[in-house]
Image (cartoon, rainbow, N blue to C red; front, side, top):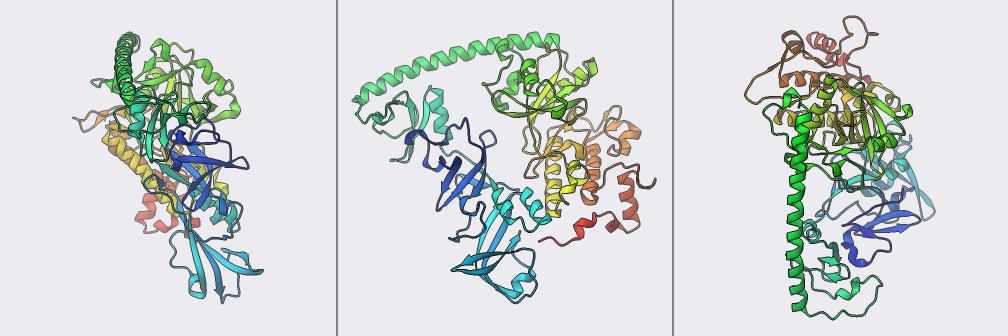
Length: 566
């Protein structure tokens, strides 16, 4: 596993003092591998994302090993850790007897007291499998694995060890988040008193006073030199001093916030005079203050924020920083093309991996699409929609959008594109992708947004095959008091609603039609348009309708889905 850097509260570990975080979040390090202990098991920490609050873990007793010495199921503290929804259960059956003469593909052997034993594994629900009717196993252990590991293991049954090493994903919550927020608000650092099992707020080498009843512990353990000398402080004097400091700090914070508000308001007014919002924003509040509450802040990244440059509340990046992040827009870093620009892989100076969209050209139409995408994405927060980190200033020589980087390509890549050669996607994963895509579209429509370019090339996938719908350059904010909007048809051939194309009337049903085409692609592993097919089947939607009308829908289904999955 790669070393973890810039790890902050609630996580602690290494040479940090014991008070720096709760014991449940203490990380160890063995042979340069970060580890987390939970209950009786120890896990390798393969990845830690403190923005998404997720961990990728792999059991140390099953890392590069499939034979257990101690048969423990994978359990975590459910009040802090929850398994991500896209994990799949893998059950390992040990010490099995069998009457079969043919060795199944999911057989693996272990040595017990010098004797080789037969063992089996099953993906997903345990019943019903032919092996179980002819085998008797003494013990079983359940381990979650990633969907990417499921695909790998389905394609090659001998890669059980590799699948276990990829680990599984969990989400975590910080049960002391409220107390920590108040601590940071008075200028303190969040800590934890393990002896009393309570959070503490640390100011230098002292315990701060906050609105919470923090543990009243000996503050001498917090001095930088690690001295055990007790600090003699009168409780009354400490509380009085802390109260006065709190009042002064509160007054300073209030004055600072008011000053910042006045600066932002002035900047927003100046900006609104120089940039005309796209037509879709008429009648909608678009001041940055309306959106800044839900937009994450990354102060370590260079930006134009010191000059008051924000668009609809998102961070404005310096062009030079993005040029450096993409290595001067190196063609080898090109990820693909969006609705109105080329997308490049980049790494910011603060370590974040990002996708940077660069406009094809800088005319008025492109600027409107650029602003449209910024406005729409800042209104939305959903786990299956791509996150916009920010954009460049209008003063920049080029207009650039900065998104979270989704590493596993598009749905189209895996169905019939460059990644399809690794093996067919199992049906349960396709079904999950369909559900997550539908959930994202339902959220958009509930938020009065029509995507207008729903297609498999605009549905990104992470390593766990979790969906992220992207590319909102053609999207429209939909008025709540009308049934449709009259506009020239836009979108991708093969996905455009025929009624929208013929009548120029855009409704949320236009997205539903496009999603239906995506479902056909998921079922068939065929692209929406393919001129190499028979002329009556070039359009996949037409092909699907013909198959349904002729009662031959089974001919549309990808033959690989007909193979039995275990």
